[in-house]
Image (cartoon, rainbow, N blue to C red; front, top):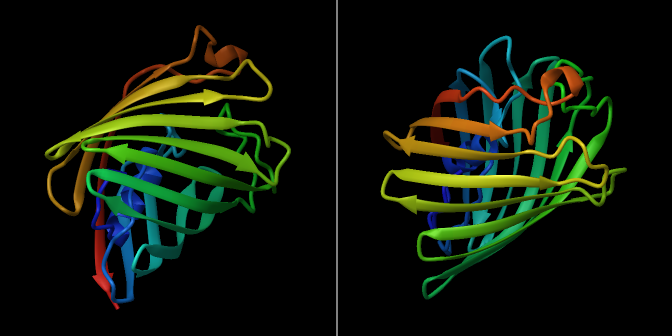
Length: 226
């Protein structure tokens, strides 16, 4: 997702599939919106979570002032994922901030993805982000799970319709850490294209790592006010 001071449901969906951060809206009136979208893959933190096919997703979002909450659901290789989230943020001068809580629900196994061992687990993260001008830094901190010490970090910068993001993992059990660069382009408010390159630190797919080939993402998301 790209950093923005005018959050829409489409921006929430874009963040979930590209692994970026965002700032919440500053509008005083409460708003309820929904999205529907499709993409050639589920691009998540430099990984393709749907290597055998495309992705469909949708969300329902509520915003008021700096507060937001919502539910987002998508298809995955072995089933589906549902995310619940709420947070608060805004902007003071050129400084933006955001604090949110995310609950990820995975009712099915996802063993088809080499780095994924979720089973029937439900995972949660606290996400802290801060930005100044075009640059935003974010920390995704795992909570309420066996991986409480796992952390994921991003630094991204937006220049017009382009966004470049660097993300990396700090895992409790070393061995599967990786980093990635993702360059995305917002062709329109609905269409996002991205290329992501992963650095697996020399760990091969045969030893539990991820394929380092570039991933090319194209997605369409449409938002509707309710």
